[in-house]
Amino acid sequence: MTTLLRITALLAAALSCAACLGQPYPAKPIRMVVPFPPGGGGDIVARLVGQKLTEQWGQQVLIDNRAGANGNIASQIVARAVPDGYTLYMASAGPITINPSLYQDIAFNPTRDVVGVALAAPVYYVLVAHPSMAPGRLSELVEFAKARPGKITFASAGVGSPGHLATEMLGMMADIKVLHVPYKGTGPALTDLLGGQVNLMFSDMTATIGYIRDKRLKALAIGSQKRDPRMPELPTVIESGLPQFVAVNWIGLLAPAGSPRAIVDRLNAEVNRIIRLPDVQERFASDGQAFGKNTPQEFDAFIKADIARWSRVIKSANIRPDS
Image (cartoon, rainbow, N blue to C red; front, side):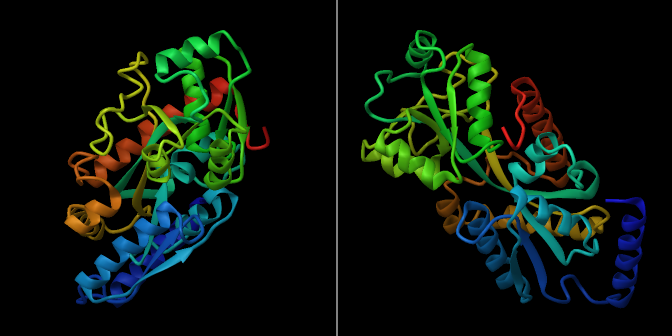
């Protein structure tokens, strides 16, 4: 965002706050921008959090799906919005911590144009294989792949997706060469994996756990720092011999830079309350503690660390949007 646009937005916010002086926040409906179409993980989280905020505050939270350009369109809309607490952004790693390193001409800077409010839900990635694959553990897969350089096929939801980057990171850390096969979304990639057209995939656990339990897919490891209680027998990649490997996506609430700190803090408290509700924990498959204390400042630090992690992978593997 240009300096002039930022100054204009801040002036507009000041006028808006002056107009609402004496009225507690929120005094009108809130728009929550989602960078992907309805039905995806981010959209589901946004609608559930929005519903709980509406019930708590008596003001409608309107979900605004702005898909396109891998989330860059939504990011720019939020960056240019008046920072008054009435435009929020339920985003994930792709638009916030991957795209800045993936795209050369992106008109959005996550450490300058938005501020973290609260992390809402973890998205754990599992390394799954077609049952016909011989290896049953990651250590066996590494040896299997080393004997067949460039022959093992890895599907992903697309170039630059978290699953793609997790695959590249695995290749670098394990010193193996695999063949990346990008698809236009998780659904088509899983379809071909289930059909045996590709060998393996790092996929969102929510999307694959049913197939794993039905033995239509074989799980080798999970990319989180600790085991998931839904599948306690599944080791982490760290336990499997790659101690620096962490591949976890996330969904979190952000706001335009310059949003009043009091509003950001109030939103943070509400999101933390919501993600600890029993019905929300069940939907998110999380106990609400995945991100620790989860303050706005910790979310900002988390974003910076995530940008650095994926930037190293993107640069080392020379990944480009058109590759």
